[in-house]
Each structure stands twice: as C-alpha cells, then as structure tokens.
Image (cartoon, rainbow, N blue to C red; front, side, top):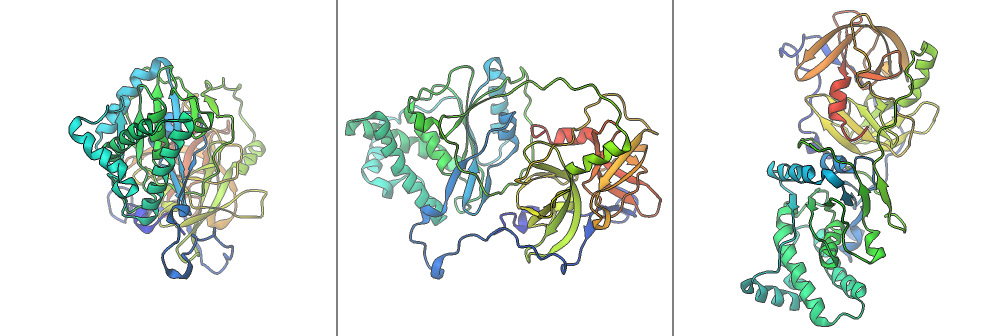
Length: 497
C-alpha cells in the first residue's frame, strides 16, 4: 500500500562517508538500527485488491479527490506542499484566496513560480476566450461525440474512467445550476469546457499513468459558473486548485458548488519572493466539509507571553511533545528508530531526513500512550539540510521554535530530549560549546549527552524553545554533539509552524 516508494527516497543518504571532507570520519547520524523481532504491530490496511485479478468493473469508483483542510498561511502551504495521496484517495487543495492589497505581489510570485519550469504547474491570469472559428468546428464535433471524442486522455485506466465520469457530471452540474437551460446553452458551455481541457490538461497532467501526481493550477480574473465548473473538474481529477483575487470572489450563486472549495482571506506581504521546496506526500484523506461553505481568516500572530526561564522539571515536561519514531521497511519490519519534535497543532513532526530515509511508513510513539500511531505521510524533506516533516493524525501541543529572542552564545545552558538506543524520551543537559557549518547546515555544537536514536530530538534553551534538532555526534570524542540550528529550521518549515 505504501505510496512512499523506494524511488521517492532516491536522494537519501546516511551520515557523510568517512574521509568525505564534509566532517571528520567519526561523524555519525544518531538514528538507531533495530532488529525486527520485537515489532509486531500491523501497518495500515492495503489498497483494495482487484477481485479475481481481472479488470475492475468500475474504475472511477477507485479514485476520489477530497478537500484538504484549510490551515493558516494557506497560500504558503499551496506553494510548498503537494496534495496527499493514499489508498486511491487524493487530498487536494481547492481554495479561493482574497488577499487585498497583497494581490499584485502574489501575481508576481505566481509568474515567477510558473517560470521555474517545473512540469505540472499552470497560472492563468485570465481564462482563455472562446476558440477561433477554425477550432470551433472541431470542438463542436467533439462535443457531439461525447466522451469518446475528448481532447485528452489518461494512460492510467482508473484516471481515464474518472475523467470521463467527471466530464459528464460537469455537464449535468451546469444544467442543474442553470435550471431549465436550453440545449444550445449547454452546448456552448461544453465547447468551452473542451477548449479549456485541451489548453490546460496537457500542461498539468504530464504523467498520465501516475495517480499520485500533484499538478497545481492557479487562476485569477473573472470566474463565473462555467470557469468555476472547470475548476471543479480539475479538483475532482486530483489537481490542486487556487483562485486568487484582491477583493472579489467567484461569481457563483450555487452554494452546493461553493462547498467544494474553501474561502480564505489572507494578508499577503507587499513583497512575496518565490521560493522552492522539495515535497513528498501521501495520506488517507478526510471527507469534504459540510455546509455552509467554510471561510478562514489568517489571524495575526499573537503577542508572545512574557518569557521566563524554566527549571529542569518544567523543561522535562516538554517531552510530551517529543516522539519516538519507528521506521518500517517494505517487509513491515522496524529497521531503525529515531526521534521527532511536534512543531504545530495539527500533528506535524520535525525530524532528520536520515531518520526517515528508506522508510515505507512510520510508527509514532507518544508519551503517556500505549498504542503506536502509524503514518505514511512524509510531508516535506531536504536531504542537504538533513530535515524532514511527517504528519500524524493525533495532536499534541507543539514546542515553539526559537525566533531570535536574545543571542545564542557559547556556555549557554541547554537541554536535549530524545530516545537514545530506544530509551524513550531521555532528558539530558549541557551547554552550547560552539557553532559549526557542516555542508549546507548551520549547526550548534553542544555537550548534553546523546546516543544513536536521538536523531530528530529536541535541543531546547531554558525558555523551552526549540533551538536545534539533534542530528549527529563525534564518536571519537566525549559529548561532542551537533544539532541543526533554529534558523535553518525556520527556513525549512516556513508556512508549517
């Protein structure tokens, strides 16, 4: 069942090899290998089997796009995260973003985003007009030919049948929304729909054989019922969809249709430079939201409470937001363990890339709970920074990331929380002993004891803020350990904190 196929980890690596020049030879990651005999819990259920090994009677029933829940900073999440896919269900963005005075800056960012040359991205400042007279005849013939004459097709039979079914449903939805529409009006809409499919689908659905692909479509300008129904068709085919505007929402009166998307009001900064990210996603997706259609407003960041130093007992209580990770292979065996830190309210777990690399799915052990929470959802990773983010269904209070209140200095007291050698949530203390650069990573050197299995754990200051992710150590020395620093974490996890 595992959507995280081995090829999706093709850029994974362990610690820098001995003598590579990136670090001394004894520099090793702190994840812990485990024998397979102890772990007997079962993973999530497998994909539905094809009965009798033959052809499915109804392919379209095996693919469903469901609405991805909205989060603060939705536009940032749209840029940095792909739609999650698991068990023939695709959790997909479909949002209408009204961004006020930040709209021009967002349009500039979208133009740069599309100009990066990555396949499966399309930004339309305005929908293309009707086809010219030379094309019109062809589209009319295609409309009269039904689904057998569609201008685009999928290699994957599940997607192909879903496409044909959703095309027919889109025409029916137009009839329902318009009431007693004359056939000539429906025909004009059908021609528009075929024209937009012909112009947009080849640029979005580049790999027509892959269900888990994550195309992204953004549009602005005037969107009425025909254009909105095309957006609905894209969404139902698993394409992430974003409509952006200054103040004017889509001009659609059908509340049932509007429930397919979420309305978001965000204050976009006047300058929003484009950024790149690496993303890998897959998860079972929730059902679409119920009426009325949801609206979200991005609230300003709350004023921070007065900071005070915590004693070691209070700091140790933060272990409830640090998890132990079990990494499972394709044979359903745990072959290594590590640690992770909960960084937001919706179950996002920050860890090291070398902890999750090679895993098909992951077991999350939470303090105070006996059951293992399984996830196959790798949200984001960066091999060079050695950072990754998982998501679990359970929620715990996050540990705040240090944002520069004061300066980190040598001699400053710190606390490390991780699961060395599988010893769940061990707490140790020490000091910052230096600052290093390893490859592209800015790292904190510290003396708090750690061992294999601590990778991905938390390095905290005395205010209980995350200043680093436990990453590596020098085996030839004593208490010479390294953590990826908070500045790198903030850059990597932007939009997810």
